[in-house]
Amino acid sequence: MLQRIRKSVYNRLVKPLALLYIRKDRDVFWYGIRIRVSRGVFHPSLYFSTRFLLKYLLKQQLKGKTFLEIGAGSGLISIWAALEQAVVTATDISDRALADIRHNASLNRAHLTVLKSDLWYALPPKTYQWIVVNPPYFPRYPATEADRAWYCGENFEYFHGFFQGLGAHMQADTQVLMVLSQDCEIEKIREIALESGFVMEIVQQGMIWGEMNYVYRISRKFGFAGIV
Ligand SMILES: C[S@@+](CC[C@H](N)C(=O)[O-])C[C@H]1O[C@@H](n2cnc3c(N)ncnc32)[C@H](O)[C@@H]1O
Image 1: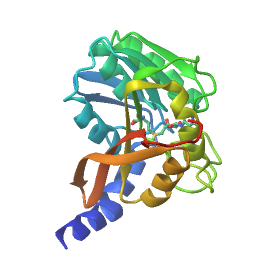
Image 2: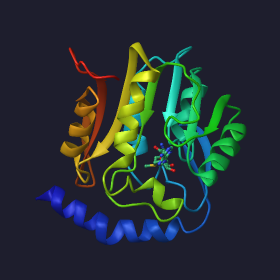
Image 3: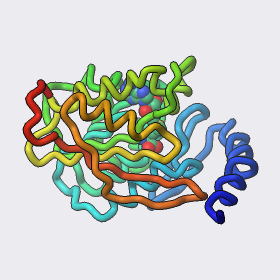
């Protein structure tokens, strides 16, 4: 009951104010990192998913590890990982996001490789020890660049592409993390993962403003005979 009230307060009051707030470019300060978030780029402090994934990553040892973030948005997670001395590659499909990642990396003196890529397409054929993603998950086709932060295609094309390409960038010890919320069609995403030979298990969950958030670890399905 309390959670339902919180979610309603969030949706009716907090969210509209937040949407007004992000109509301008904004500077935010988080985890000791100052970042610019341009209008149209996913805002890591107004939505919960970025920080929820970071909360899990904060407990991990990333020093010296290769780390790939697919769709890095403002770059907060990738910059944090680079400052933890991971060897980071941050990608995005949005030019505006890429400009923010580059600007924010330089602002924080973080060294990372930044690549424009639609999912895996522009990535070199190499594997990573960590692969993290905070995906767009509403089933609609994105009409604008900013929409790409939210919409995964009517038929979940983003997830089909993600799981079809994932195996080629994994090695035996790769940790793959995906953050999702109860607002998305988790069972559908799990089904798409399975078709490509991957299983998803929850490694962290928590309620924020009445919305359940999850961090999933993705691994190869034991005995899967398909090509991954
Ligand atoms: C939910 S936002 C997450 C941003 C950032 N990772 C964070 O946690 O703050 C999703 C990001 O994925 C990017 N994106 C959407 N489709 C993509 C694709 N096909 N390839 C690469 N990036 C994509 C969007 O531009 C957006 O920056």
